[in-house]
Length: 329
Image (cartoon, rainbow, N blue to C red; front, top):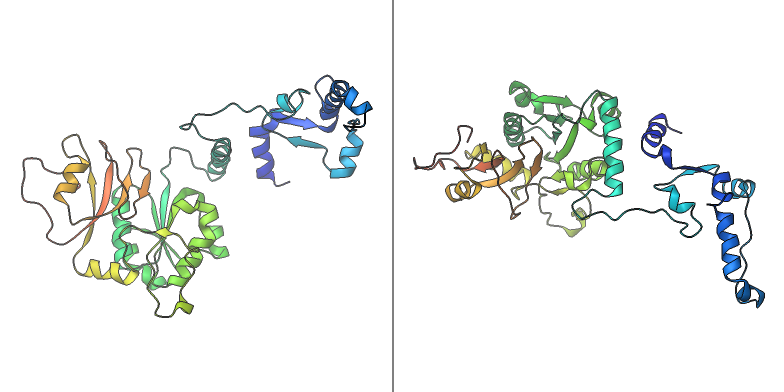
């Protein structure tokens, strides 16, 4: 068994280990269940209407399945002849599910192995160096969210390096990336190169690792031939402003900029929206620094100390008003 998997099982499930012998014998075991079943159905068994349940043995289980012991979420119910299944308390909708709880514990172990802590802010990986992705990465960095830009073409990363953005020159799907990058430090990925096929490959390949809801892809170019269209079931979620890679670069060339704005009690999201009607929302950053990318027409909830990243058109700054936006707007 992999050492990390074993460590996880020990940390999370050690108190719920059941051996074959425990499963079979004693007052709380399968054989007790079989005896109880036969006693309760003696008449039907004698009449031939119900088949009697025979006892089992640890040797039979081992020879039939190769299993000597198993981990379960709750062993008291499994070993109770009147229950014979795990007893899992019902959880409220706002509580994390069992799988989420296990994932969190596994994440804690992975963070510890990477020398990180849960207090570290999860970062963003941007795949593809270009004028607009560099501008986006600068805004993310300005918001104190870790950001890494990766591109197989070293030259495409020149502007990002000049701006102080952490970079990786190489294929994000390569063995070199796996060895050199601590992907556990990042929670979100944006596939944003000029190659739609590569973006789709990256988003599809890394979706299981990041979670499909955390993998985004710049809008694809429309192909004139249906034969050349990539399946819509592949790839990531649509990234923010529904523009293609070329379209995003054109916006930046035309003077559009990524801006970070902190919301306050006076400068609310509603105020921001009323004064920035032409702006396109890109992301929301919680007071704890967790970034969530926003799709077009997605409902956004503002709160004090929430920061928003948006693309703003040139010369869109409002006239001086009674309520001024925060300094970082």
